[in-house]
Image (cartoon, rainbow over all chains, first blue to last red):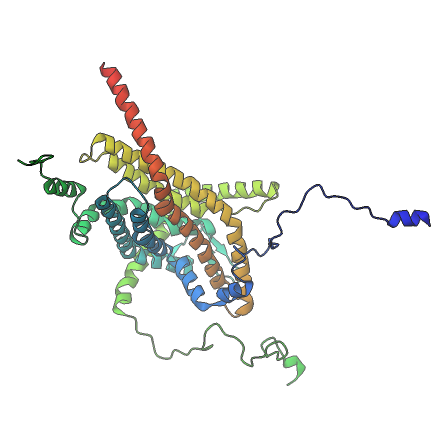
Length: 214
Length: 229
């Protein structure tokens, strides 16, 4: 009897590690980025057709999505950060830098849309019907799906998606550098930085000294 | 109705309160007896896009393209085997590498253009070029790091998304669902790399890069002075 009693007695043991965090247990299989968005809202978002349309646009025209996102960054985020953040530059220089950023964003977006829209549509045609455009017994780029149709493998597909951006990066840079000065001059009414420095010199002419006009 | 005639297409009133099955499109059947007229823009662009697609097809069939693709496939297979031996799941970084390659060409071009710009003083040219190079280097490291941190979460989001959409719209083609899922992956990469390359790194790194460029300029002028003396 005494042995059974001693067997069933559990002495309190102090745990060497204390539990400091008592947060929500995150399910590793279904993580949410934060506890703010409820799973029901996420499920509703996944089922929405507008999200599907956006994702289809991103997948089929990723170069144009890239240019659109770059436009948002260069025309909104960057100029606001240039003007709001403290820097050694004066206000005129800050305005010039912000206008430069907006101009480069607009030019990049316009060029990307003009050049990459037909290219994206052409890539989509190849992805929908690869056998029509990629023929040959020695060509290993196609993979057969379960329903008997053939589709492009992941690696040639990835190269084809990004090749226009890689090949067009330098020409786009050349066009951007060439077109920024006219846009700054005629759209924003800003010349070169040198002309703005000359303006400052004209406003403070040399003949006005500390003692007053000579 | 005989029980043998009951197929999976019949309505299960126990589970589904709605009598009509859910359909992805509002009209489940479309009849097109009248041919759809294509717009002028489409009539003009379709042949051009066909030519571009033919060009891409020819490019993918060239020896260089096949060599690059086969080398990449060997590399990816090696990485995947090593990951399996380590007990990890391998996710390809090819899209990230290709985005970085495009940015490398662009940044390299801007650096060379700055160094050859005769309208600027030599010191300013050098400072600006060093600034651009440092910002590009730091952007690349930051972008790869953040992309690596987010990769597994994006993979889980894609898996959940495919499951939920396939359950909700069973008549939807699996290719379309995979395409939507591809959109999630591409959006995450483009937004991460774009945000870091075009906004975060220039804002955060430019002051330090300028300071480093100025210090290097001072060193060079000191060296030139000592050589002159």
